[in-house]
Length: 445
Image (tube, rainbow, N blue to C red; front, side, top):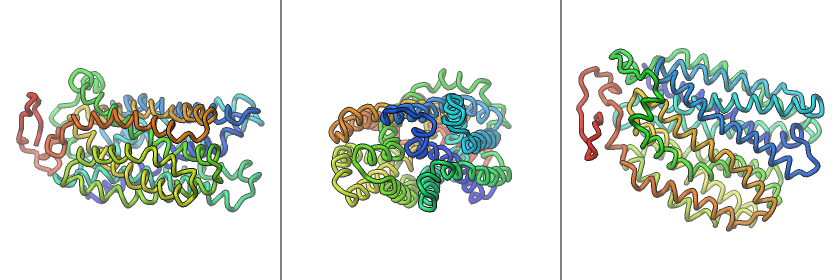
């Protein structure tokens, strides 16, 4: 199987899934709070709208169990095809929904239902896309391969925010609120058809194929996961929490923070977000490649320390002017957080054996995502009461980052201690060389 085709299949679906997911985040701040959750108090409308945003995050662990089971039992490819259909179909239908003014409470109820379907689908997409790449990589390139599906986040968000920016530029405010906002959601149908076609041409990953041929498939992956690998499951949850809160702020809530509490225009906030995501597209593969030489954990720790150091300066700089706002947004999201995110797929997946890897990787990541997804509700309350409050917001972020930093210090260097089977990646079906770790755990090399 050609590596380029595998990476394209991994990236294409990831881009579209995150395009759809972050379309909702952008629309929450710009559209949904007005059209689906009208209230005489704008702060309450925003709070309720972000509750539905968080509902999508809360649904992601459910998707990780469902699609993790399919991915670990039937195959990575089958699971990834289903996640595309779920995500694309729900996003397309959001573009067709009537508003509160047209059908009353049925409108927000349908919106929440489709958001839940989005979250369930994404809960299975991310882990599968990462494994499609990493389980097809040769030894010494897993960090680079694992960073490619991570590009789906900035590319998807750039496409989503660009679509809203472009449509906003060519429509009046009334036209945008009436029908313009629907176009990006409807366009997702075209992208989904393209991604399904690309993924239909690939095969299963070498490592999963070998496990299936040898009969080493877990009957109930989530049960095996908690029986044998729960320590690493909880490790992944903690590792993701700190940067997860900051990530949700920098990529979603920043639109509300900058426009509502600081005073920037919608276009200025969207431009800052777009520029920082464009920077991530450059940062992620470079850092992924470097991680194959110096290790995932080293980069992870350095990135968390940098985020802790820049947390309060970021919130002080945002109100200081557009130059500072753009610079700090690009630095913190486009460079520092992108460096952490570039390593996460490979770092986390290397903690689990192949028979529960899809479930373990997805569930750990998505449980953390479910927790941080409700951050905007808390921040909306904080902002409504205290305004921009740089020390309050910065201190909140530092607290979460410290949890992840402590866990990362005590995590293994997965570049050298891994549960991947190198013989399967290299296409050699002979017996792997085994190594016993100091804890007595048998790992494959």
